[in-house]
Image (tube, rainbow, N blue to C red):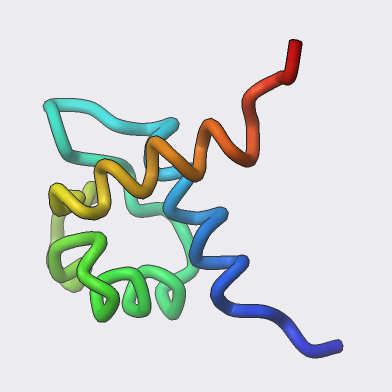
Length: 76
């Protein structure tokens, strides 16, 4: 099976929104390859460090909120 990495990345970015804390920090307990791609796309700061969380960029914050609502909100 071929995997659409962009869909995986969108889902991970949406789930990062779910774990936001301290403003723009989110727990980084997701697939490392996806986290690296999100960094390359400019959505998160470099995830390679000892911290258990990662900082979302302004672009990443907006995209994560949009994707979270798009993928997980209930329609009336």
